[in-house]
Image (cartoon, rainbow, N blue to C red; front, side, top):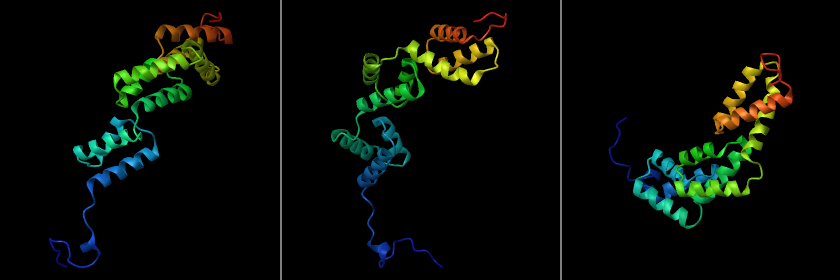
Length: 185
């Protein structure tokens, strides 16, 4: 069977026009936002991966921002609040998450400042909650191993090293986990 270089002159293929690039990009963006909230930067990257021309993507992003479907400030506040609540991240780790999402530094700082104003739990209280929760699965470990793992967990969540060591030692002492020398904490 020979293939023709030109589209056929009859049938459904002859009737189909090339889709409007703006509408294709708009559909991709809407589906992406339907799946999960995104920053302007993340949505722009998604459109680029899908092969949308930069000028078309910029038009879609501008329109979505104009009508309120894209709002980096609201996205930043949502990300900060949800990551703080679900994963117990400290402000340093939250700032990194915002940077990865392409949030500009001014918007990120505003979201983190709002968190500081609204957050009832201090970093120390939240770190203590995380340590207590994690300690339940660490029964039977030596004091030093438990301390190292707890401090590492807090460090990965963005807590200041001195705060992580202080909180972990205090919780181990209160929970009665003996040190390697036989004393508690």
